[in-house]
Image (cartoon, rainbow, N blue to C red):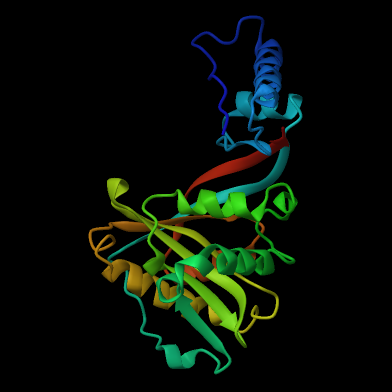
Length: 248
């Protein structure tokens, strides 16, 4: 993750255009430095606010690609969740917490579920193939406090076809909806609301989630079905970001 400096009081020395050139030069230098290390990262990424024109100009000038504009959304924990029992899932679909599977299978199952859910995804599809799924999994696990009780793999006929990943963040008194994704085989069947109901109910009752004041998530503005699902659950947008990436 990279950041650039803000505009100083009185403006950039040499004007806005020169400031963008200077920031881009710093980003190029950072990229060259990263290439020299023993463990070269796959990508550099940045998440500026759309209002930070000085930042977006610098990323564009240094070769970063915009892979999506994101809504940051949240719902208060006090918002009511309509009951939706497991029996409403189709008989050939099940939602199993990772804690119910052998530890040796955790990474394999979640990686399979992630890969299947990325097919024809509407969440930053430009990112597909730029990062290894193993690295994405490690990033998801590092958010807040990871607990296998709140990670679910969604199966269809015993095959992983999606997942719901929720991580409590006690320091922020929140729960992060890290990821919810279904493969094309499970989309369009109303499963999202059933999966999310079960997940949020469990997360808010979990020992690490009982004092959470809100649940937060980020979603690509182009992903209208996901936004509609979250809004149905009481999520509202509170911030926006532009997602930039560049291969190292």
